[in-house]
Amino acid sequence: MAFSLVLHGVLPKDEILGVVVGHVWYFFNDVYPPLHNNSRPFDPPFWWRRLFEGRPQGTEATNAAPINQDLAAAAAPDVH
Image (cartoon, rainbow, N blue to C red; front, top):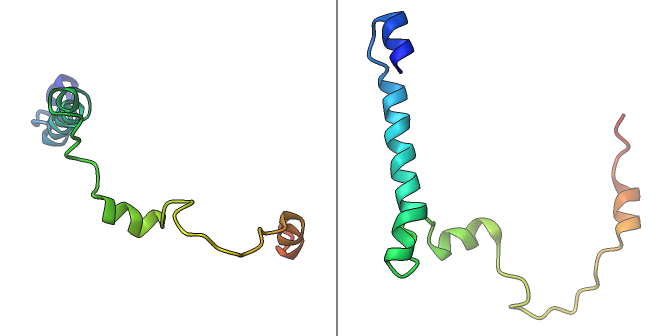
C-alpha cells in the first residue's frame, strides 16, 4: 500500500478494502465459531447448499443400476 501511495500519489482504496475484507473473513471463520457454539455466519444456509449440490447421498432409496463406466467412456466423443 505504501508503494502505491509513493509511486502513484493516490490512496490505494482497493488494497485497503481487501485488507479489511480479509480481516473480517478471518474473524468470522477462525475466531468467532469457537466462541459462539461453532456458529459460522458466512456459511450458506442448508437450502442454498442443497439447491446447488443436490440432495445428500443415501437419503433416498432407488432401484437404479449403477452406471457402467466403460460404456459411458465409450459413448463420449474422442477429443484430440
